[in-house]
Length: 228
Ligand code: PGA
Image (tube, rainbow, N blue to C red; front, side, top):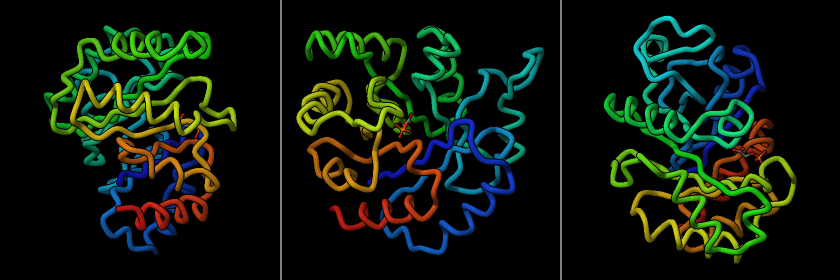
């Protein structure tokens, strides 16, 4: 099981250090834990990854960080394609694929996020699969360090996760495309994580808001430990 925390634009460097210290008080056993803090809080730690980076070593890319900055903290994990970057920051599929290929070349572990908007979900699974496929264009689905995160846009931060049946059906469709781990993300909470982790083809979760409280995130890891 993989349990990953996406802090988004939350927490300072000091808070992240304290969080990690507290988190490490528990034994993860065979649960793979990941924490994605903002880039100003990157820390050399085997569980820490970057939420984003530009596909270049360094250069004239104002406001961005690249491989050189990640290497300073020995970061070799990255989150790509999050819906907030696709929709708010306007990242195209072409650009996401460029980032994927650059960081794949560097042997990074890559969580690639995909997910449909509500109007697509309303049309049914066929339309959903079509969108997901378009979000996987240019991505090597056989890359051994690839992790897919299925995150329906309408479930992110809304407090309402996708239903068990929606997750089961969608993960089954993604499974037909890749053998790599598939996470679910979108309003994962203490109250629904067990149910979600027990769904077939769910290999873990990507947690936003609920991960910000380290005590909650610790409990989530404890729940994941019990699922074999
Ligand atoms: P959420 O965010 O848990 O706050 O819904 C999940 C995500 O965007 O990764």
